Length: 191
Ligand code: 5GP
Image (tube, rainbow, N blue to C red):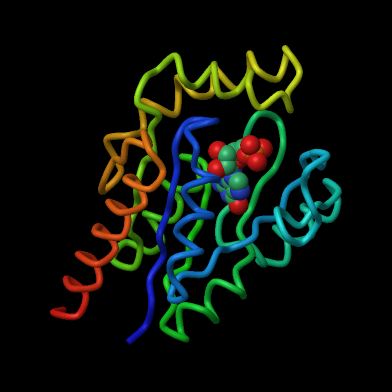
């Protein structure tokens, strides 16, 4: 049986990264799609591990050559999902995890309808978004402002997602995520 796409979106600093790490540690039927981006590389990031870091020209070529499954401009930078990796893994029966923004989420829902499960991840309190963002210490003041404005807009998109998940404690949130995945596997096995 083919696998499916698992889309995780949510406002900046909702703790998606920690959730993803925990989920991947627990399961070998899930693979993470590494995105391509034109954003600057943060000090703690590694090329080809966190992202494939590209120039704008390289990114434009990927679009032109139809190599991206979806892409979007987020906070002034481009981000996209390499198509080939996703298609191969789905055929192998894997669940492919896409940690992407709401614009990308909407493109995936449109193009993959029945083959995508979408989950919106939220921090327990709205003010946590700003707190976590500042605590991370990776962004400039200007950048924090843009990210908070984007977060407000992203929250409006929650209604289009199949599930929302409150990321209060990472273990608890990962347990719930696994339950959702199992429910989806079960549903798909009956189709
Ligand atoms: P960050 O710069 O904090 O790593 O990511 C900023 C935003 O871009 C996050 O909301 C993240 O989910 C989103 N993002 C990362 N990769 C992709 C991608 O391949 N496609 C889209 N549409 N958004 C992405």
